[in-house]
Length: 165
Image 1 (cartoon, rainbow, N blue to C red):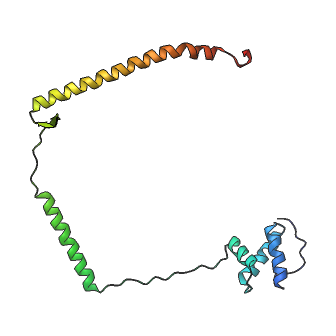
Image 2 (image 1 turned 45 degrees about the horizontal axis):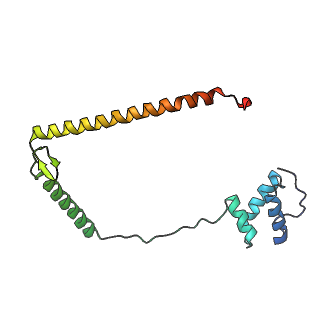
Image 3 (image 1 turned 180 degrees about the vertical axis):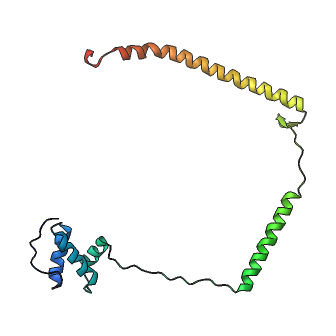
């Protein structure tokens, strides 16, 4: 820190304290003067917006403690709530495990009608897979054709040097 030319001690008056705070914000105080200002600000009972600001910057602001009312229930209510929670949990678990196991069954819908014959469902699945495969092959062919058209333009662009233009 720079050496300050401040003659007044920060403890003398509000005006002197404000001058020292301004010097602090302008980085004109020495390390020792900053320590003295910090001690003075921490102990002062004077009220001013600049003092509040420097307290905040120095980390000397008041710590507010918010007390919240506690919700204390009687022990009988806590026990009853615990028992109710255990009963509800046990009932839910028993309902989950008591459900009948569903048979695994293949179902396909053709024109809004359910088809459950396994062989027919597998045949429909294979047919749909072939249609999708054909679509992918068509897209690949079109991409190859587009790249064949674009390739000469890219080669021409890469062969031109910026200074040739």
